[in-house]
Length: 319
Image (cartoon, rainbow, N blue to C red; front, side, top):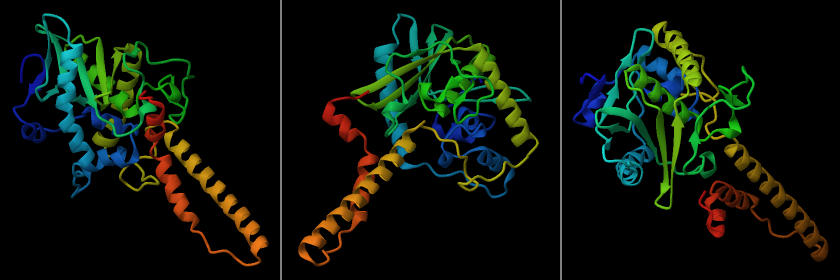
């Protein structure tokens, strides 16, 4: 371990062999801030207290994201690391910022150094969908809290910011702030952290989060309480409607609701059309027409509702 409280690894296998503590992924799981299929508080508990627990295998989407990550970092290095003394550090590492109450050990995708001073970090994401869930390229989040009242449930917002004002899905926001907190606790006075979102070569966005002491202290309190309850005390979180593998928190505000509404509306319209058409044709011909499979139209509607990029391509929009 180097004296700056950062442990570097020669390979991904060495990094995997030295897992432990609370990483940024564990942080959003233990706070129930991620999609249910990604795990939740029960998953964090099971990894440490459930005999025979096995971590889920890497999915195809995760493998593709890791493959594209190096190319996105190369692009970021060419376009956003400006200055004679700045350089991008992409070696696999962990930030050692743990203590007994909360052993923080996140692993950033990259770090930005100014000579021997660490000034920022980079987190890369390559999502398959969700254009509208991310802010525009060049957005800077100076202060997280906006106009939300304290104590508002997570379904409407988080730590003072309304759900519809999220610059990115909540789990990535938690990941970014957790890593910034760890870096500062490790002795590095970082002031910003970039979330680089790559949908493709024609739509790559850099969203900058500046350090916010108020949200950092509140997030640290929430993480410490959850870690002590679930990991230290070993209290098993209750199962959810998705079973024991996650939580019910939605990651993309409104997206699934919009799709469900579109699909339901389309099905209703198709049934109405078929009923009207059937009655009209039956009256005209005096016999019952051949049955048309409405579910075929429903499947087509579902496919269209889940692929919003078709309409975007026709209008030329990429944001």
